[in-house]
Image 1: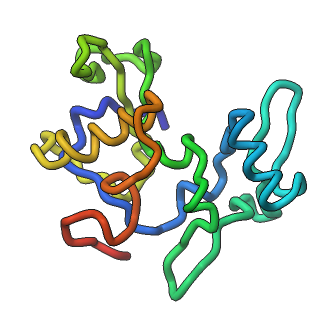
Image 2 (image 1 turned 135 degrees about the horizontal axis):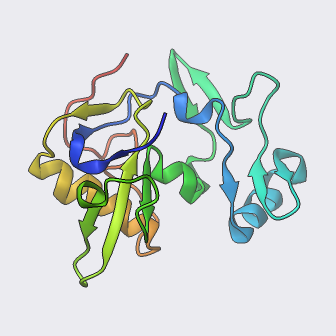
Length: 168
């Protein structure tokens, strides 16, 4: 499925379904790879000719994904790669998946970014973006993508998000 412009998302919250950790290749930058190798060993990553990836189990799930009382959790929460922090959102400098007028996000410094979402995420609520989503969750995703923030509060599952969770 092609990613969809963010303007079709009313809200988003993580449902701890684990879908983001199943069947997707997680690209690591060199510092992320080094942190993981130092903490867990090289066997938890996969190299390619030009990139490093998180290793996956034989069933296609990330080696750091585990089930705790029916919820899928990440053992890398304390050093989660940026690619994982951003999923299901893609923050780009150029419109890569079409519909640029619907994907454009005007960042506070005058920059235009293009943001898309993976429609397979079940935590997406479709509709016109609400103010909370726009000013908290979206702003946090953009700050993380631009390297201005590391910690997640609104764009992850956890106790920080001040809205009710819809768990499946």
